[in-house]
Length: 98
Image 1 (tube, one colour):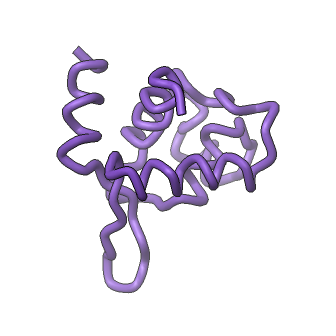
Image 2 (cartoon, rainbow, N blue to C red):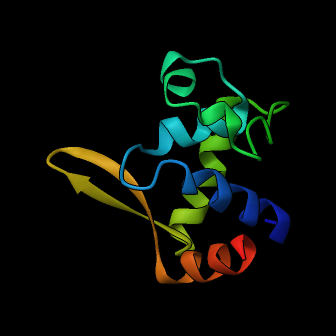
Image 3 (cartoon, rainbow, N blue to C red):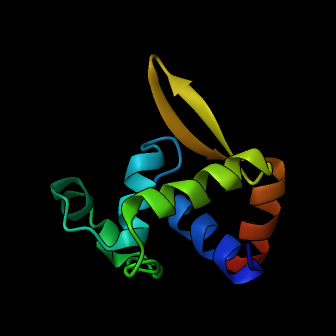
């Protein structure tokens, strides 16, 4: 995966760290009009719709790759899986954010 894609996925994850999971992250990147996206104003993310031309399934594969490669992690809040940065992912996002 290209560095630009990694940064875009990490940037989208910023909007929902410990509040959402893989599905919501994929919907932000897809540019979904899902009511949860609009309710929490996630459509204001600078990378909203970054993967608008891809299928949701293909976006999920990219998110799973990010998890497997150690850029993102899944933590559980009770039984709900939530996206969080790994140290590796946070180092990239912190630099990008600055």
